[in-house]
Each structure stands twice: as C-alpha cells, then as structure tokens.
Amino acid sequence: MSKIIIPFAPLGRLARILFLVMAGLLGAGTLTAQVIWTGAGTNAANTNWSYSANWTATLNATANVLFTNSGAFPIVSNINNIVDVNSTILSLQYANTNNFHTTLINPASRLRFPTRPRRICCLSARARIKAPIKL
Image (cartoon, rainbow, N blue to C red; front, side, top):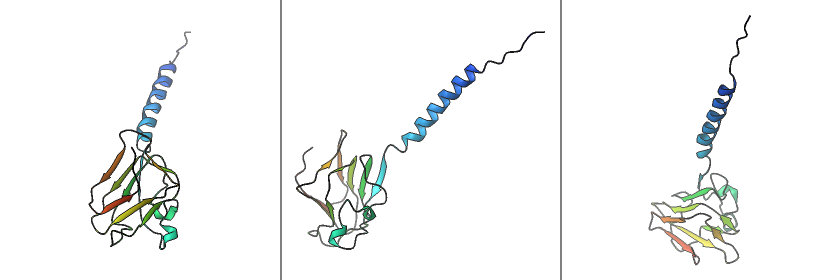
C-alpha cells in the first residue's frame, strides 16, 4: 500500500506571502492620519495644540494637520491656535474659506516636519503663521 502525501509547505508559503501582502495593504492606510483642528477650546488656555479636545484625532508625527472652517475666528489678528509644546507632524494645511486661523508658535516650542518634501500649504488667504519658519 502506498502513502499519499499532500504537500502543505507550498500552501503555507503562499499563505505567508498572502498575509504579508494583505498586512502591507491594510497598514498603508494607517501610516498617515488626517487630523483636523476643531477649536473646541472655549478660552485662551484651551487653544493650545496640546489640548486633545481641539483635534479630531491624536496629534503625532504621522498627522496631516488640516485647519478648516471649524474653530476659525472672524478677525485675522486674533491668535486662535498655539503650538505650545514641541510637535512633529507630517504636513500642515489651511483650507478654511470663512473667517481666519492665526497660528502662534511659542518661542520655546518647535513645529517639526520629519520628512521631505515638507508640506505647508495655504489653500486659503485667510491663514497666518506667527513665527519664523525654517525648513
């Protein structure tokens, strides 16, 4: 009587390759995250970037930061968001169409962009950054 041998090794290898491909595809979407400023803080103490209620998600080095109409202020000279701690983000974009965003980077704080090309984009003429920017 002869034995029938079913080769599982190729199937195991194929399963591992498929798993790695799927993990790569699923992970690609989580490498960066869009984080939107909500401006939920109601007083000057809560307009800090470190106040988590001001954001739709966690602010971290993979964040694509977006300022929209949320939390915008009707007067351009009023500072409505403050980089109060050292922060690293992937990109910064102002896309508000109504009112204004004025960002202050405290002298003791740094806003860093870890990758090149660094993206700071103003789609809106209604945005100001009050700090020297060195790229």
